[in-house]
Image 1 (cartoon, rainbow, N blue to C red):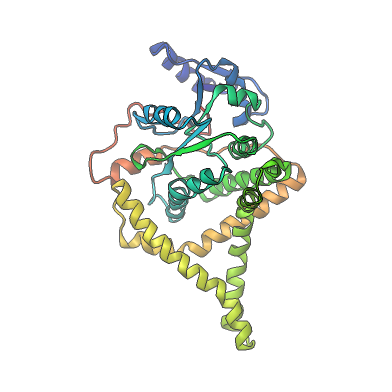
Image 2 (cartoon, rainbow, N blue to C red):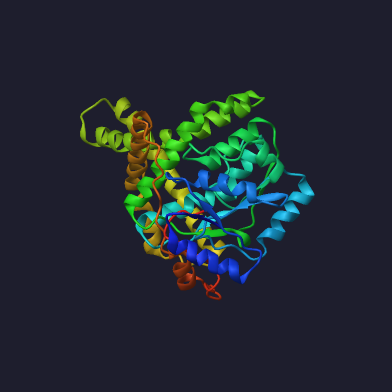
Length: 354
């Protein structure tokens, strides 16, 4: 468990856990300016096993996950195994629906494509790397705001084998940010981190043109998505309220048609998500999903603009995401089967790697 020297309360909890179980060790991060990659690099020399795995302290981890990951390593000869992560408190707020679906689509489908193509931006936790591979790569980039993505890009660029071991029953459960401002800051950090990885140009070492095109598209996707979020309302307004030729009005309305098609896929996805995790999805949730779409795109656009502004200003400080354990409360309240036992689940107020 990695704790900061300026956080005596968390350190006390960690030390008590270590006293109860000899397998638990506490590493103190003494960096004045703290972030997750610096903390993990501090702990890396203390790792004694063949594989290093990363979890955030608020994660709810399936008790059989490590056996599942071990099997993936043994049967595939992988250098890296990426497990599944799922936000679970889908009805905490109107935006949490979309946040949960993003994770659902990303870990269930998109990452498999990346692994098959030989280019993958890794997730921030439930990722497992062979220790010698990780040390050969000099650990995580301490100055990158998307250290997980950066590690995946660097390892992919030198040909390391990455396997996605996704099992919906064994996903690591997390919560969505508790406020719009917290979500905005989190997405700003991710977008800025993707921009940093893009500018580092490690992805240009990928051997094939297809891999490099996929890398360029992936690293630029948040900004294209933000642009779409800004342009769709403008196009709809032009098509509906301005007196323009029919051809121009039709063209400006095309992005809205694309958005409507996307809504259909999202509605189906929300139903599948609820069925997969035994969660009750009601009519009101579908309504919030559709009505909240344009506002969510505007929020993503604002996060991207803010990320570019911060990057240009050289502001690389790590904006922490607060946590309240909503994924534990929501899981227990909404599951159709046995409530979750939350006695052994570590919960923290901020992003603290463990």
